[in-house]
Image (cartoon, rainbow, N blue to C red; front, side):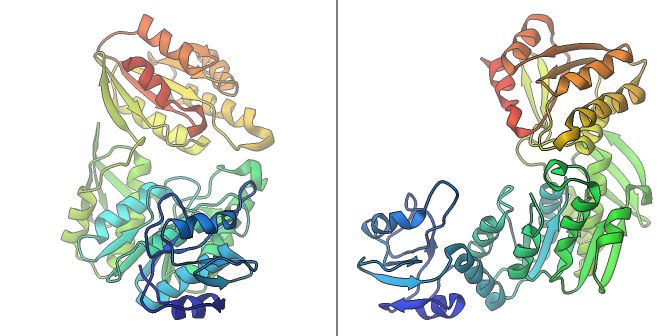
Length: 436
């Protein structure tokens, strides 16, 4: 997306030194900057991009944003804060091209929901979405500034690690519609309580224009301070017709839909996308076709065949709710199962209890079934100890190498292995070890 110098000055209230005709793209990275770009340096706890302005100009930039006086050649747009300037530019573009903006947040399922929304809306609209899980304020700016100028619907995923973050993004995104997938225990170590998590997620309503679509959760209902239209959805409103590996068929509000993924939680995530699509005037055939074309992204139920064993990698992230749901789905659908569970991060002072509860839940739900569980890491030992009480075959390991060696030495062709943990556990190492 390109801007004139005057547009950038207007958007950011910058003090301009020098000028130039034409239009320019914004770059925040000197490693990928192109000739003719304007460099916008960002700052973090351990770096200051403003120290690389001269490098950006040497690489072909025609100017840069700055917070202090300098003697560099080229255009200089002086602002008090470069991140604020970046957000203002994104907001300027959002309002200039004026797509319908959909904000998506939640403790889990927000990336999956974003992909489902995109898959459906693309049947009717020119849609643009947040890349991968780049869902903070910088990712928001990147999403807006990378959208084609004829974008009709902009789908913005919004992550959260503390109070005020979602509200900040919404201040500049000005969403027309918002989806809250749930408000569970992810990041409870930072926010302290489930109520606080729900409050932080409900910040998405602060600048919301038209409608909130949210999981039917008592805390969301309590803290969603929004006077506009609200729709609450739940798996309880669904009649499931068929469930098998990689496929779900269900009825929602007297209409039949299909998904090329399994899991009740995936069905529930799809309900928000269906509701949004109807509100945007899409037909049943368009919605059904778009939902059927959805496929999960990397590290979400990736299936690989390794040495005759099927390995399903769902280690993109993990919290107690998603671990209970995904493991339950796996055990309901697959024969000869082996479940590999790792630590879940950011659960605060009660992290041991949250892990114990996962073990208790799985133990109670699947007691009497023949299942091998492998647990990896310090915290997953609490899952292990609980499962042992229910008589399961459980082996505990300190690291991925020990786990990989056990699998290679003791397991056989024809089994299906399911991997679930927080990203910090790096379970992709297990897959590489099994291959090599």
